[in-house]
Every structure is written in C-alpha cells, then in structure tokens.
Length: 296
Image (tube, rainbow, N blue to C red; front, top):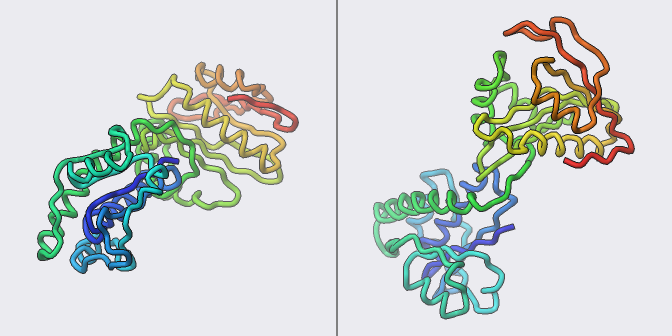
C-alpha cells in the first residue's frame, strides 16, 4: 500500500479538500485499497474545523468534509508516509528540512491559499486541485503493479465498451452490473495504471465452475493478462471448494486453445453449432481443480 499525505499550512482548506477529492478519484479508479491518504498542516491548530467555504465548495461536488478537524504534522510521523503532496515550494522545503527525501515530495506548483476569502476563491482552489490531482494520479498509477480486483461499479463503463469491442453478442453494462455481489458468480477485473484492461467472469454451483467470459483489450494482449486472470479465477475456485472448471472455445481460436492447454485444460466434448457470427462448433474443455497446483 502507498501512503500519501497532503500538506498545507493550517489543514483547514487546501489539504483537506485535496484529501477528499483524491479519495473519490481513488474509488473511481478502483484503487481504494491500494492507496492510503490523509492530510495535515505544518502550522495547524489542532482540532480546528474545515473552513466553511471549503465545506461548501466540496458539497457542490457531493463531498462532505464537515467532520474534518485539523491536525499538525509531527516529525515522529514523517517516516510513515511514502509521498507528500504539498501546496507550495515552501511547504516542500520545510518537509525536506524535516527529513523527507526530495523524491518523496510532490509539488504541483503554487496553489494559492483561499483562507478568509469568498466562496469563488474556494471554488477556484477546488478546481485547480482537481486538475493537479488528476495529473498526480496518472503519474502515481503508472508505477503501480497490475492488479486483479473484484468487479465494481466504476469498472462497468470500460468493460461494457470492451465487450462491444471483443464480441459480436456483447454483455451489456446492466448485465455486468447484475453480477456485482452475486454469490453464485466470480467476476474479476484486471487494472493497469488504475484502469480496467480486461476481465474474467464465471458462475458456480455445488463445486462446479463455468467460465462465462474472458476479455482483454487488444492493446494489452500477449502480455500475460489473460493468463493472470485465469490464474486468479482458478485460485478463487479452489479456495471456494471448486471441483472443476469448464469452458467453451472456438476450435479456430488458436491462442486461447494454447493458453488453456498450457494450464491443464483437456477436451471433454464438442457442442455443435454453438457459436454464431460466424457459425462454428465449440470445444468443451475441463480443468480438474482438486489437488492441482496451477501456477499462472
């Protein structure tokens, strides 16, 4: 987990606004469990509330920081944080003098302090923070490893587009949404730089797992993404009492067949005229899970 601290002077305006905005961005990117963020002030009055106009400016975007209370950054907690997002060069200089390494300090430029000004100034600060945080998130996620996480609502638009790109009869966004939290399903999304690039979905009952879909964006194929997704699905199935996993595949889909065979799937049947667009039989493959060590 990466730990990020947003730092300003009093911790009543800029840094709590940045913290709330960035938390929302992390949730939208499916990174809520990968990044921890908080805020603090270099000269904060402990327990001071968020500035009223800061509260109002974020309320306009559906965010609530009314419960925020300021806190002062102490030297003892400096080693806790991996990165410091500061509002000015001066803040960065103070942090460096307190022991932070230069590569830990991110200074997007001078973000003016709106303290004591009208709501328009706080809106301008909010908008500037959002812009700088989007750039910061892009740089941050570029260094995050590929992640496989359960399907969540923020993934749906990208995966519905991927379905339309990959399949002649794609699943709709609503169909995918129905699988979120379905106890008889396992739908996993693979994220790269915080963005969905593929997914796998299966249903199960009484220890029998059936693969519904496996899709990877064309720009990310032949990079081990499908293999990683299948590995995560197989692990889930084994941890949930799965006996075997079955799937259908076109006989003409050479790359997919090679992957399935490499993982230990064997042909156990054939379904005539299973596919349309174009018409083709389907090979029925099966992987026995009990006692199998599948390394993906």
